[in-house]
Image (cartoon, rainbow, N blue to C red):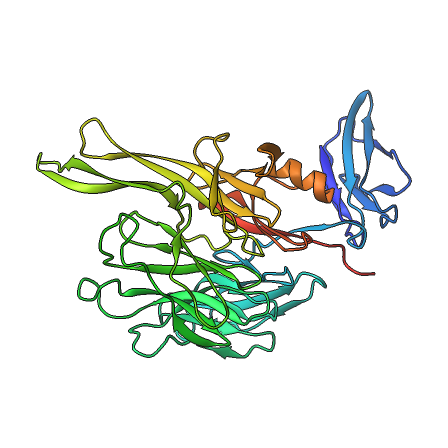
Length: 460
């Protein structure tokens, strides 16, 4: 048996003891642990002193009842002011977002209103101080919050409204506004990412009608809150006429590189734009150096033949943290397509891949089989999710040397000196002091995915 305590401010831990004979003795292995019994002896109460050593410590408590012995291992972390902090954001519904420099994490919590409807509380955590800003709750009739998208280093949080459309943006004072699309758009827009200074936001909106207008889904860039339509390639991921369009998904912390996705059937082709601050050049396909497009004759289920284009190239779905802070690297997945023997279906493979926007070259990581490039640092440390759906574990890889740096847990322990559960890393701030990750947890409803963060020690 084992138990763990924080570095300071702990409450006593009560442990039920079933001993035969009933009388037992509990002996701590160190003076910083105290072991006492309840009046009837059925409960053992453990208390610990605050940990001033600056390091994690461990001891045992030995319980003796006659000839029977039981050992309890007691672990205690250092104080928050002495070690990087690991915290779960498991109270947030539908994930959390970290600001580009790691200053804030944002999300929302859900609760039941007196009339049995849902109500939502947008929440912002200052990761440097631990201060929490919570607003609301707001009834679902006003703001039906469904997914956290982005937060700026100034504390402006964007959360999608799945019923009323678009998003709310809420700041540290609780002030709320609804982001607007350019004139002529037919719906409220979605903001997906921001630059560190808050000057640039990126996202998408609909302009025109599906199947009536060419590529009605438009990628958008906001400059100082003013929305602009981003240019789109004439041909889609398969070198065919675009019929739906796509989105801008993320932007580098310095605001110089934007990435996005086409969104036509299962294409998910990944693009990037270079942002010069006043206008944006036409996008290029991420991984254009390895992208291949060719024609194949396929069959429908009734045997009818048709010609289509297959692609080997870099793809991205709805992930929002694929780019390094200065835009040098973009994380992606290299997907190949091969006709099945019956030529009715297409067989795909997918491996983590990373594109260097300076050299315009792609590194495909072959080491882990089916995998996804999740994030990457400016100096080429890559974070990889194992598998393609329902990812629960991750690897760390050095793109410069082609070296495996271990599981997520190994890398975090080596760099930050703390032990974390299994999971993978979504984002690291430019200075490396703040980390946002994801882990899978079992619950009565099945498996859920929650976010966690690592932050520097709290100031004394």
